Amino acid sequence: MTTVLIKGLGLIGSSLALAIKQAHPTVRIIGMDRDAASLSYACQQGMIDDSEIDLAATASQADIIILAGPVNVIVADLQQLATVALKPGVLVTDVGSTKQVVMRAARALQERGVTFVGGHPMAGSHKSGVTAGRANLFENAFYFLVPGLAAESAVEQLQQLLRAARVKWLTVTAVQHDRIVGQLSHLPHVIAAALVNQTQQALADSPLGLRLAAGGFKSITRIASSDPTMWAAILMTNPELITNQLQDYINQLTHIKMAITARDQQTLHEFFAAAKVTRDHLGPEQLGGLPNFFDLFLNVPDQVGAIADVTQRLARAQLSLINIHILEIREDIDGVLQLTFSDANTQSQAATLLVAAGYQIVRRN
Image (cartoon, rainbow, N blue to C red; front, side, top):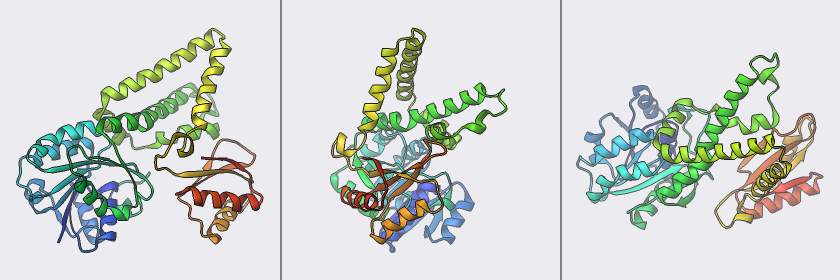
């Protein structure tokens, strides 16, 4: 019997446990968490088979160890695992959101001949904790793998274990991961929070203030609602790269500030034009074969049942949606509905169906 040890039963750890149980009911899962209530809940719900509190004393039982805490805790866990007896052939992995610091911490373990595969599922929820866990949390989400020194067989073993998660696997180096995630996730969170805070201060003396915030403002600041404790910790795990990226962004703002001051309309036009070209060309059709989602953007009238009509038509045609999103970019007129599909064929069939029903496709990615 395969034994999997999951340390950290928050949203990610508990969801991984459920996905493993779904695909491998006979796998024994040992759960570890500093919160006794979380362990109790996980046992009651059948997420785990046993609970433990001592990593050093329990690790030797595991064939696979998944470290699902914050990055600083993962680093400490790796340092501890490097000093204790482990099963021959054990596979150790993590879910940390920065990878260079984790891969450095794993070196001592690897020097002992222990296999380590870095991992990072790019999925989450506004809910947190063990009670928010669900097996389909990662469905069609990107899951970064950083094999480092690990053999291909170890990567395949991990992918097989998590096959019920139905993720899109991406193999990268630690440097690639941190650069990509820093630019596309960490930096935007800082920018969104800064814009919200600056707007609150700028409109503090206005009776209407943020009550009028809608449309584009709400869309680009949505991620400012993320967990502040988590994001403060994330920025501490990759400070040099994030500060460099933040400085590049500040330089862009300074450049535009100078252009506005100088009444340099040509520079301003080039600034917005360059951004438009890049933004309009996001997606697999324009940027290459990276596994991705396929989107349709269509106008929907502001009337009761409009969205239901779209989804019901897709359901009757047995066209599966991965995600649906109402874009808050315009007020008091037709809205834009973003429909996400898993492949180009489904996207094409949906477009044909909806156009025939009288809907206007604004754009497809």
